[in-house]
Length: 117
Length: 112
Image (cartoon, rainbow over all chains, first blue to last red; front, side, top):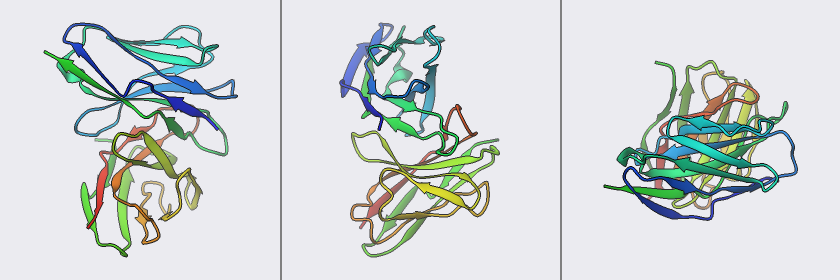
């Protein structure tokens, strides 16, 4: 079974600064996908960024980037130039694609990020 | 607009009653999922379905039931056997294999 751990229950950052959220996972699979989802106060889950395990290059989406360390089973999210709208819960999630088992996500416990003006 | 619609947004249930949460998608996705979220915790998988008339239990299926009679619909019934049903429930869908999951806006269920 896969497990995902987010060791930072809460974090805060000043507007325009950079913050890094941590995530570690445990799996024996070699083919998998990792995601960061954002859940703002509206509680809508929004995909921020995804990383395929077979890709060595770290994924980047505008101000969001990841540091994927496959050997260490680490997948951190860096948010640059933090904005007030980045205030949300952030969830790290893991998925192994199985033909007969669907694309179920295993989630970490979340990190509550507060961006301060 | 394409998306996933969950209803109702808020639901109150008396102890001992069954309630059904609705989830409809018009994204033409084959796979659909139900997750439960408790305060301060991540999401946990209740049930999932890859095809009409077929579904599988997730990690916390006890006290829940689902059906998948149409591709677009995947309702979740919270039965009286569920000991602690008060939670936030999220429905999601995806194409099969290696793809992003799209989420509905959730239903907040409270037992009164």
